[in-house]
Length: 283
Image (tube, rainbow, N blue to C red; front, side, top):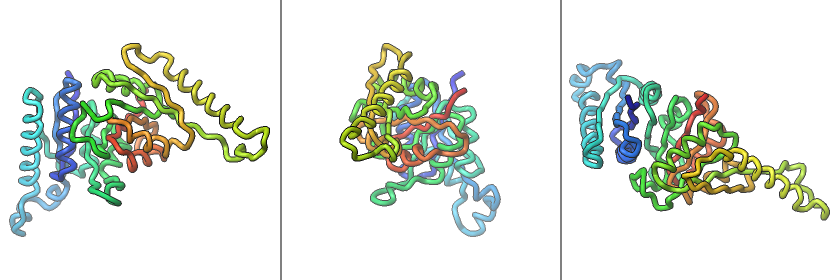
């Protein structure tokens, strides 16, 4: 039995674009798609009160949104099994619970443009931090597609990412038939940035060589059927990875702590120019 891929919807345009992306990804992996809507208000107030106030029932709104999303997914992939579910709970809690029996969760970010585009919704942030399965947050210009992107490249930030995150990135690259670029950021400690003529450049070279060796060690067992490119870059990972995302169709980063995003993940999710996958460590 294949675990479904879950797409979170709320009726907004970003969430409907997430349905497009999720349908592509589900078809790519050969798994069913579950479109989920989490709504809390009616759980406490009830449909009767909504009618009394002359307002549309939250349940009716949710059903309309779910039907529209399912039609959208089926038009995109007619053979894809698509189901819908309305959960009377906070959206983030509903999605995290669904992730316990899912292969992946896809959510849209609510940013529109300018300053708003750099902000990350609380639902996206919470689900990415707490889900048991990988979470895709659709940042940047992804053209509503999970495949056939403009750059033809996936990037994974190495850092201290566990082997399970690399395996996930390898799988995505293989399915898309694109190369995988593995990025290792490196920095020299501030106290070694000296202006002595005999030391200038030497510490930087040593740290870069160390990063390159760590990169090679991590990729020692990389599958031979995937084109793997190695890149070291000077600077903090929270700056290096968002910059690299401008050249990628998908950015993969790892998450070690349950319920908390580290500084790097937080920065990448806020500043990435492409969709980001936050993959939890699998022990």
